[in-house]
Amino acid sequence: MNKSQKSHAGEYVKLLSRAHDEIRKAAEVKKYDIVRDLLEQCQEAALELGNMIEAVEGEGVPTIPLLESYCELTYQLHEEIWENHVISPGKVYKSLRKSLVLVENSVKHDIPLRTEAVFLPYKASMWDSLESVWKAADEDPDCDAYVIPIPYYDKNPDGSFREMHYEGNDYPDYVPVTWYEDYDFAERQPDMIFIHNPYDECNFVTSVHPFFYSKNLKQFTEKLVYIPYFILGEVDPNNKQAVDGVAHFCTCPGVINADKVIVQSEAMRQVYIHVMSDFAGEDTRKYWEKKILGSGSPKIDKVLKTREEDLEMPEEWMKIIQKP
Image 1: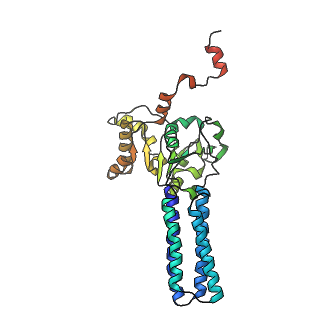
Image 2: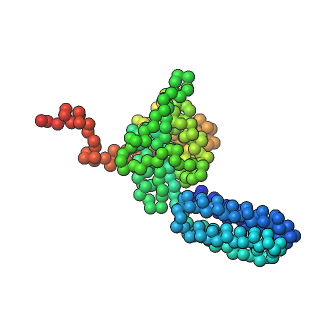
């Protein structure tokens, strides 16, 4: 489970605990119809929690049989009230609390906390701007990394969409690709989302599907990370004319909406900070200094790690290059 999912499971437990308090209060004044209704709601909530855990962790989690026992207890108490029209408030509360504590401890200790990172490339030719970061995440035993190529559209002069393109079949064989409709962002709430297209609706030539605009993705994660798909010529941060020449790359929606921005060098970081401080106000400089990192471009990592024998040369080229 990732951080968001585990937090969600914890909220279920808190909800059940509050329901137990209400059950005891209703039982003390002999409002057994309310008690039965609350017990039914507790059972439904426990079933929902179990389904959520199974969907993420599978059936072998110790929490599942504990939730089944809890559901059985709520059913037995419900039937006891139905048949006898009387119940001990303290006994009911104590038995429910005892069962729930076992569930709570299991959620905390039996379900490992994992990081879930999602990578959203759109053009396969630009995958090198994310690949080295994905590899690091994929090799981390405590991280689940998903590569989800997203569709994009050509645009008409009036801004409307033309043909849709999807390049999920064009990635290297060693990259496991997830179909974009098979990943539920609202349900999974990944810890990190990585994008390399910063334009949202502001590109006049193409557009990724609007669902994947940075302003929309922000709601599904605590850390939206933007890494440019391009490498700019290095710019002296003190050269105003040169800085003005690249300023439009710095003020894109992806830069504004991301929680972290990773650029190609420390010099380029200073350029971004300067441009964004002018754009948003000098009082925001510390915000941009914290948000923008000059850690380097994964595109450079790709070039440095590529060996000659790994390159695939088209047969037509080989006929020209190779001697008979």
